Length: 306
Image (cartoon, rainbow, N blue to C red; front, side, top):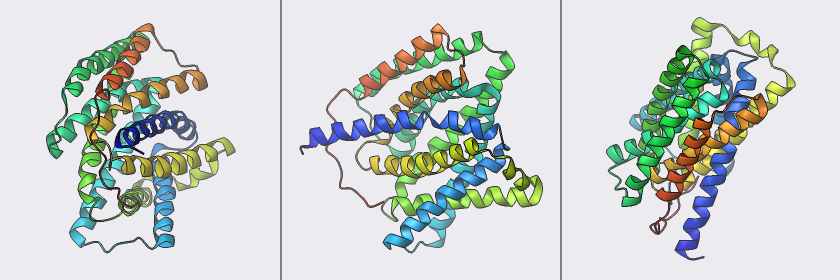
């Protein structure tokens, strides 16, 4: 397979990944309607982290990690999978699925800029051509949501989600420095288990919510497993694998597709309202995605194990 064809396959995988990921907010809403947000965060990162740890033990890919890297990976896990998850899920609980995913459409811009600033990635002209369309689309979806919602819901939800995505963007770009030091699966196992441990300590120390696990229905259990296994294990594995072939700022642009697909699932599953301004904004986000990926991509790097 030629380099050009290979890149097209990677871009297609990135698109499918984000469409599937669009189901996560709807599944998460099902769960947080049944149990507290903090308990859900602890549960899902425990399940996914254990999956990665079992995979590493079965394949014998676990590498020795120096204490400094261990602390750094654990800190990134607490920020990106613990604290950021709390913010995103409270934003979801307050504003609903559609509000969450459309505000989260700011994520591609945030992650791309963080990748450019902190990783010194050099975006091509096409990225800067796409940026105005992305920003215009994001403004439209924000205005559209304000028209059908209250100011308090719009502002509170937006602030929580924006803080979460800044944290996730920092974790996303700084995780690249560990790809040569350990397999991606080991990085994910360590960071997710650390985040889960942080949340369980909160449970034992102050929250005392574990008894509410009995409130989960069969629907809620299925939703937890979908998010933990499909999203947190499979999707994150694919995401970190794609980082070997697609620059962080380009891969981040696909999160716009994640936002649009998430809004669609929110509309279908929860009958949440989508205004014409939101629809037009989503169209501009997709246009920005197409523009950002239009030129010929660079040849892929050598893959690393996960």
